[in-house]
Length: 322
Image (cartoon, rainbow, N blue to C red):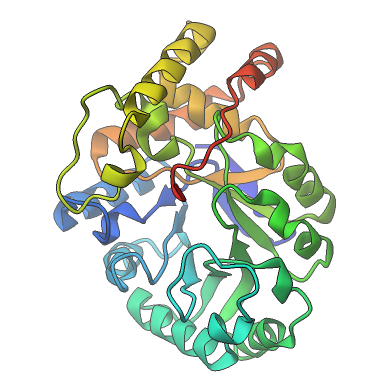
């Protein structure tokens, strides 16, 4: 497993990180704790050294599962996130920061996550949503300063609203945050339009989430696909969306040909081909997925020629918000 440095921090992270939303159980049906822990252990055995979670992933359940694992592997770096107090995703335009991230909420959520994870300090704490209107507020800045001075958090970042990379451009330019987490994949190439270049310039780490577009880029979404009751993908892939996905993916397969061992391999290596990306965090609930995904780091970036051809497969849409 290759590693990269997380922006301006001194934190070394594995190129393939662990996205821990699915193991929290919330909105993902059939999550199995034993299987999740086995997958985490296998990932670490294969060199994975970065896990991204959030309190909202099962009301702390994901954090608590991770605590059981990192107790045995204290070298693994962990990032978590503070949910907005109004529990609205994404952040709505015009909503004041006091309704989402008042100082006492930022502090108390951080202390709760510290307890869940069983650590004295967080490597990275993130706001789970962001609104450009908050950029000049002293609330989040003072909360970050307080937590850093108290030794409870080392670095801070924000998780960018779905498909809105431009919403943090001004924030990145302030040099007041250390990382951004953003949707980045073959379909949603928008972070590469400007955000990742700006992050590179300001030495802000980029954590790339949803490299598989919630499963589209694994090749598993086909017409007639079904999901268990309570699984959020019933909405994400509602109506004729599986047909749309399948048509796009089949064209993509033909483009990739034999230049990757699989569609998921190409998806991960596409994101890692951007030098501004510090780590990519696929969700992995099974050992087989862990083994497949972790191997992609050793294969290196895709060829510049293929990257250029993949531009034609950009697909701008929002299955979360519709």
